[in-house]
Amino acid sequence: MRLLVTGGAGFIGSNFIRYILTRHPDWEVINLDKLTYAGNLANLRDVAANFAGYRFFQGDIADPDAVAAVFATGIDAALNFAAETHVDRSITDAAPFVRTNVEGTRVLLDAARKYKVPRFIQVSTDEVYGSLEPGDPPFTEESPLAPNSPYAASKAGADLLCRAYHRTYGLPVIITRCSNNFGPYQFPEKLIPLTITNALENKPIPVYGDGQNIRDWLYVEDNCRALELVLLSGQPGEVYNIGGGKEIRNIDLIRLLLKLLGKSEELITFVPDRPGHDRRYALDTAKITRELGWRREYSFEEALRRTVQWYVENPGWWQP
Image (cartoon, rainbow, N blue to C red; front, side, top):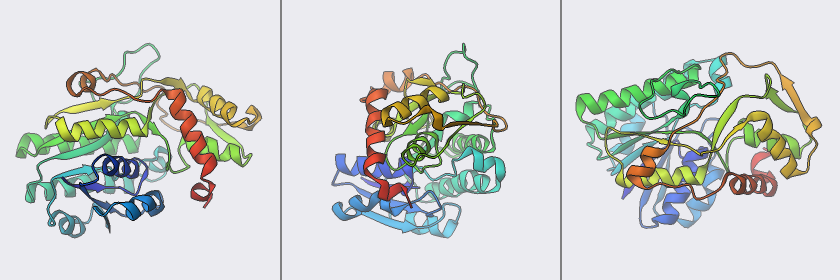
């Protein structure tokens, strides 16, 4: 199989490329990445050295010429990981999020139509569903889209484009919506790597508001395993939720990380809450479990220990 992975130099994309080539060393993977601040070819240095089927092209998914040049080489499936993802940055300036996440997805969909790509997977987020109250049931694939941040709105817009291209043109699109991922190679602006790296340097750890916001955490390798199943067996036109099954308050997660690192909770620094901060996310994963047989392989505790250990052992990756 010959895959196009957009955004493959980012966190989830690079983990997916490593996972898929390890599992299928005879496959080919083309990585198309713009190399923004969060894209890092060091994420895939070992892959480039060890897998002959891996190729990298630098380009913007919102650039039709760059996208067409890659699709014209012949693609069996495209997986769109490329996205601006940091909510805080979207609040400061929504324009890059609309350009990459909405217009970039439109460019990819048009190329997939033109070159008759047999499978297109849109990697989305639980944030498109909006926020839950503490007693609400988890979101299902049938939950309405109600995004509350410019980032989430741009991802919801992309999802709706994907739905429309499937319904209107018959494009074989599948959408996955995952909960908060964590693991190696995550840019240290996100909560878990920020907490770990700040703690290792004895820097203050910022906590928004009262720290009671709840997130559902998914180890990145378990997400990669789910994406592999969707790639091989998912049904076009469907949406699949991929959740970690581990809801935890932000403040409790930070305290757990500090305990694993042997650091003092005095590093915790409460800061003003961000506008429109969603209170809780949670995903019902019954559909992907029932239809594709997906199960999480790692417990949250084991995955968190693995993640902490990776950042402890790889300061040369995150310190720059």
